Image (tube, rainbow, N blue to C red; front, side):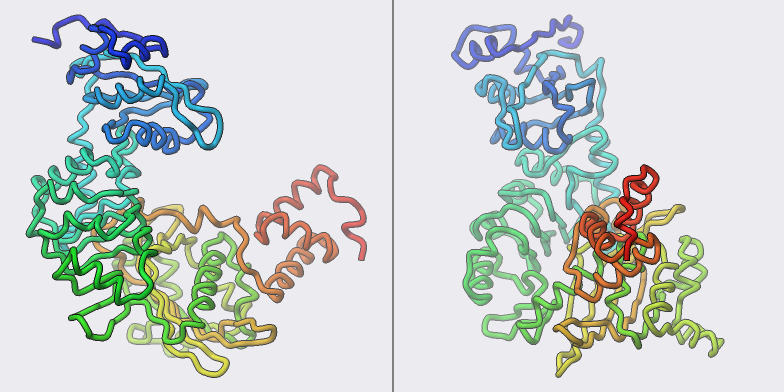
Length: 526
C-alpha cells in the first residue's frame, strides 16, 4: 500500500518554486504535491510577530480560489507554522507567488514549504471528529437552529483546525456533514464568516428544510449573491452589516430586490414585510428619526461603561432622584444552581417577594445607592450584535427606551449566557444632556443552544476606549480622582485624558507613578 512507501520530504525554496511554475519536470515535487496521504508543512518566517488569524487570512486570501485548511498552527521561536493536506492547487498558487505574500501591515510574509513532511498514517488528525463535535455543540435541536457564526473561531475546534467558511469547498463540506449528522435544521446562523458567496448552500442541497438564514456581518456585495437561495422556501433572512445594504435608496427598493431571489420572504432584517404594499413591522423601532442617533449614542455609551469592572464610572448618567430596580425571571432554586446568587439577592420580583418591606429596600433611589447596587452584580460583557432597541415614548423633555439582547456573566466560578431587557426613562437637562430618571433591569434565561464562548467579548475589548462623556460625567470622574489622589483638577484631568477617561486605569497610572516619585509637587498644589 502507498503508506508503506518511504517518504522523502522535499524543501521548496524560491528557485524550486519558480521551476515548478515555469513547467519544469520537477517530478518528485509535483508527485508529493498531488498525494492525498501526506501532510505538508508551511512555515512563515518571523510569523511570530503577528496574530494567528492575521497570518492565516493573508495566506488563504493569497491562494484563492484554491482551498487550504491549516492544521496545528503553532509558534516556534520567531517563526510560525502549520500543516495541511489535499492542497495541491494552493501550493501551486504559493509557488507562483515565489513563496512571498504581500502584507499590508508591514514586510511581506516569506513562506517556507516542506512537501511530504509526514504521512497521514504517522501523524493522525481526525478533522471530521473535531468538526462533528463543533456542530453538535452549536446545534439547538429544540428550535432546529444551527449556529455557525464565527465558525473559524470555535473555541475547541480552532485549537487544532482553522476552518473558515469563506472557502467554498470548506463551507460545502461543513454543510454536508451537518445535513447528514444532525436531525434537521430549519434556521442557519452564518454571522461574521466573511462570506462572499452562498453557492455552497445550493450545492449542499439543504432545500426544503431551510426556512431562515442569518447572514449579518459578511461580505455580500450585491443582492445577486442570494441567487443560490431561489430553490429554497426561505421566509426570514438577515442581511444587515453587508455591503449590499448600502446599494438602495429606499426600504421599498431593498425589499423588492430581496424578494426577487427569495419570493417567500416575510421578514427581512428583523422587519415583518408581509405582502407587497402592506406596512412594515419593526423589531427595532424609532418613531422619530431625529432621536435615533441619540438613542444609539446613549445605548453604546451606557453599556460601554456598565461593562467596566467598576461601575462607579456611571455616576454622571443618573439623575439625583433616579430610581433603579432589578428583577430575575429564573426561579431562585435554579438560579442558585447556576451560581447567580448575586442576582437572587437583588431580585425585586413583586410576585415572588412576600416581605413588603424588603421590596422597598430593593428599590434604589439616587446615584450613590444605585451605583452601590450595580457594583454588587457580577461583571458582564454585552453582545451588541444581539441588541434590539425601541423608542417607546418621546414627548417634551422625556424619552423612554427599551433595550433587549444577550450578555455574558463573568464570574470567578462560571461564565454563562443570559438574556436581558432594560427600560430607561431619560430626562433632558442642561447643555442638551440626558440623565436616567428610571432604570428597570430584567434578567432571564439565555437563548437556547448557544455556548458562552460563541459570544464575543466586544465590550471587554473596547473597555479602555473613550466614549462620549458629557461635561458633567467628566467633572464627576475628576472629583473622584481628586478624592483618591489629592491631586489638583488640572492634573486629574490630564491623567484621565491619558487613560481615555477610564477611572481605574487613571488611578493605577497615578499609583505606579507615585511609587516611582514620578508625580511632581505642582500636581498637588491648589
